[in-house]
Amino acid sequence: MSEQPDPFEEIVDAETNRDPDLAVIEAGSRTLRAQAGSPQGDLVPARPADPEVDKALRAVEQELAGRWGETKLEPSVARIAALMDVLGEPQRAYPSIHITGTNGKTSTARMIEALLGAFDLRTGRYTSPHIQSITERISLDGAPIEAERFIETYNDIKPYIEMVDSAQEFRLSFFEVLTGMAYAAFADAPVDVAVVEVGMGGSWDATNVIDGSVAVVTPIDLDHTDRLGTTPAEIAAEKAGVIKEGATVILAQQPVDAAQVMLKKAVEVDATVAREGMEFGVVSREVAVGGQQVTLRGLGGEYEEIFLPLYGAHQAHNAAVALAAVEAFFGVGAEQARTLDMDTIRRAFASVASPGRLEVVRRSPTVVLDAAHNPAGARASADGITESFGFSRLIGVVGASGDKDVRGLLEAFEPIFAEVVVTQNSSHRSMDVDELAAVAVEVFGDERVVVEPRLDDALEAAITLAEEESEFAGAGVLVTGSVITVGEARLLLGRA
Image (tube, rainbow, N blue to C red; front, side, top):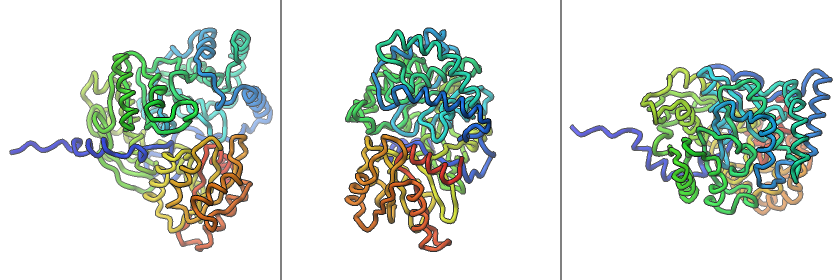
């Protein structure tokens, strides 16, 4: 009798040849969860109810806003390293999992956090940017840090920040100060493990003063090309900086040239590599109410019948990456040939949410928020919408940043939008609405483009257009283009 083929072998070719653009973006939903209840805590906190706390938080936000923003960089870790030194190296008080890549980082981080928490580990998670509240960026045990604790952490390290500022050529940036706050808060908690997402790049990113025992690389694509490089290989070279000596690298499906760069760096530092489509991957998936049902192949074996309350194929691949990262953290694969407890894995995945990414915030008509901000993310979002929602007519609301590939983003959405309402958010980085409209007309044609400079008017216009098919016709609205646009829309639609 011939030996039966390993079912996983059947997905290797599909994974290896799969278009990496289809396995991207930070996306998800906190709604329509079908199993295992809600995640811990309030994922997107509102302003503090106590006026005094709110005043103190605004004061901290104002001080942080006076520093270099996240888009102004001086590529160096000298300042953050100096801050860590005077703080007593808090980032070395706990092991860490470090996440880089172009898209999918935050959703993957949330999944890793949920998995670790399900195994009774106290977690700290640092992600960016935030949807509505700056406190979302620093999480303890799956919930954003309390406003009071955020303020206290800032005030505790403020004298040390000023000390470093006075000794450096440039003051610490907004992101560097927040990174220092996160590492200090994690040490103070204390946490058992930190899950840390890079802000941009890798080698000179402020987060890269940690030595992650596990380095995760989500799909790499073109973004921030003015700072990171104009090809996937160039971008990968910068992001490979998170791979430390002796670490385990969990490598999502990548463009060939980017994968080559990552593998070369792993060899140089004697790191172990696990590749999606080879050592782990998605065996099967099917659409389910409120998300999808998946079977994953991990480093230690197969995990069946996992409910994932997030939409789109890209999220299944993010889940496979997250599972492999947690297995690697626990030594599964390299040191142990076993699977983690199946019920615990299922419970953890069923609790996952990723606010502001393919998130349903209203019905009749259905309004979905998604923070896709580059062409790769937009393609994955469009695929997820088409697969999971089946709208008869979809109206887009797009407010994008001027430094992004806006044409590519619009072209990705063109096949699924019946009409698009272009607008702008309150950020100084937001693309002027008339400039955005000019590009949209070239992509969609004049008859399919509506211009509304104010986001609230844009939402109202889109909902009105969707309602033209009547209440039961299955029309919907997708708000996208920028995390800031999504966050402001979320507030306007009452999801605070």
